[in-house]
Length: 441
Image (cartoon, rainbow, N blue to C red; front, side, top):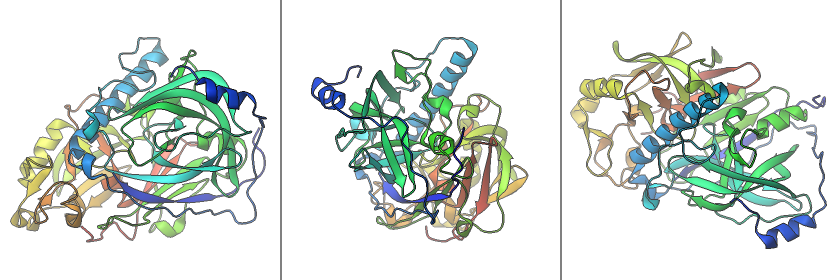
């Protein structure tokens, strides 16, 4: 039963460019730990908590931004198909347990280009870890950068964990510990401690806030076990009033900027205009295992993508659409793939004639203006491109329409709108923000 201590907890996000056995020495320190099994902290009188963080641009990985996103897209689709197979008693076709297939990129292409992270405090005394916020996964784990430090609240388990993201992976062992995301939001959480992590330069791990089902199959030896997410545990402990997460990004043309906010237990009305527009989560597989919605896309009045299922994903930088839809978009815009960057490049004359893209979701048309369709020009060189070129942020998913996940609305979309993932009511919402029509790019 939930405890009657409702609250709204808010974290400020930053924009980042970007085993099977417990080691004996760590096991020894864990075995001596005094563990608080039912630890939680109720929120105090001020329910809104904000953490300000910095931003990092990964100039190595950025030169292969498209390959990174496409590898992640393939892995997300495969993981969803594997989840479907487990639910129906079929066999998994993916790679590592819980991670899905899709293969892995070589090391210099793995690191994420642009992500948002929060600082979580783990253990007692608390130690800070910078964790990428990911709606496309649900495991929370550390150890990619800063090594995990056990404390007297760390509880060892007998389980290993393994997750793969297509563009990176992590494996190690599972522990339970206290995790503080903000004042008044301290929970008891199962977290992975990575002994091997590839593709996460500059961060310490991941804070997975997607559906709990994505954790199923990530543990061993019990591959059928699932792990409650941080949102699940905060809700069950009565630390949040509503079973939802709000996500606010904003576009930026500079390398260092505090430009995001993650809100647990409600929404921040100061971050969006007008009202939230709700749409039910899709029932189409494999998109239904994520923050999956249905939409169609038009370029002006011309159809690019008919009604299809896909996902909203904070772990993807670009907007990816099915290959046949992308071909239409390329024809409409006249863009040509750039040899260095991989993104479509258009001329100033083509930009002057560029039409808005409309994402039709739940009966509402969300406009992505011509300026919102291009990569920030001030960051072209960091991307490996020319400062004078115009690069489009819409690209090829890598597969034709009709496979149950035909688009990913990544950060380039989300930074223009406010998003809410309502777990309790199986729905999502979007709203315009003061930055929807910004000319920042």
